[in-house]
Amino acid sequence: MTPDRRDAGLRPAWWTLILLTTIVLLVYVLMSLFAGTFRSYVPVILTSDRAGLVMETGGKVTDKWSLFGGLVLMQSEVTRSLVPSPQPLLYASNVGLPLANVAHQSFSLLSKYQLTDMWELGGQAVFRSKVYGGTLLAANEGTSIPSYWRFDAFAEAKIDKNWRLKLYVNNIFNKLYYDALYQSATPFTLEAPGRAAYLVLSARY
Image 1: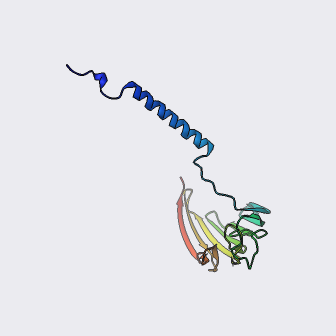
Image 2: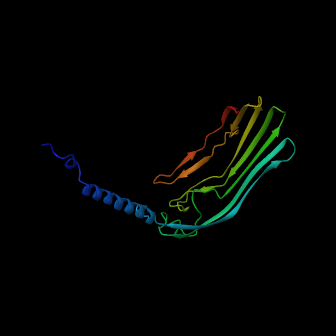
Image 3: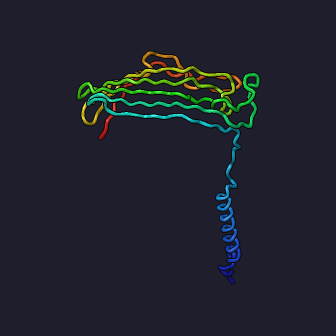
């Protein structure tokens, strides 16, 4: 006598229990996601006020001459801090200090001139103000990197309606300046690239 095929495998009651368990787990996971149970939180240890002016402009001065510029003027101040100053002899508190690692003033001006139907020449001036170093967003270490001016130039040739060739030189005066200040037990700076030239061939169809 052969056994009934229905005796092989799981019984319907077990399948029902597995289905109900899966549904309960799915509902729990979805509710936890919406409630933020699995979300990590970072306490706010510093607040600040920032105020300033941001301006951008651009357009044609003549049929062949175009100008594009930007200006940022900003002030910042730490208004609340839950951590002590790492340099209590220099700063008793972080409150009242400016924000660290932020250039509070910057300026850029790009000029382009259409020399011929084929050639376009241009240059750019960039300024960034002094940047203060610090930990936990406050300029509380007494370190800084100086302000700088940088000048770039470029020439672009329109070979035909699809192809363009562009030569541009960044930091044409090979100015030594720094991009960033990293604050650690031993602070260090990131030196910006010196004079660099690039030749780019591009196509558009």
